[in-house]
Length: 51
Image 1 (cartoon, helix red, strand yellow):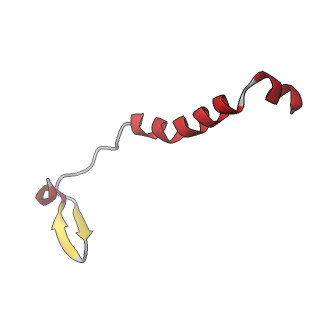
Image 2: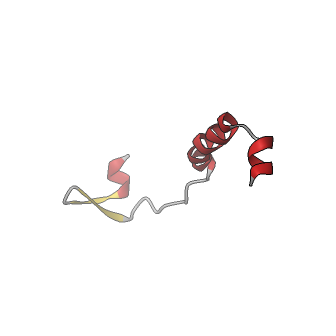
């Protein structure tokens, strides 16, 4: 472990940890059925009504 910490600075480790949640933004969102029924705040709606 000491070899690892000597080679990589704390700043690099922190930057990598901050960048990890940003990677989830690049995932493709799944295709959804526009006629699907969803519940929003107690209201039952068609998904196409939300767009």
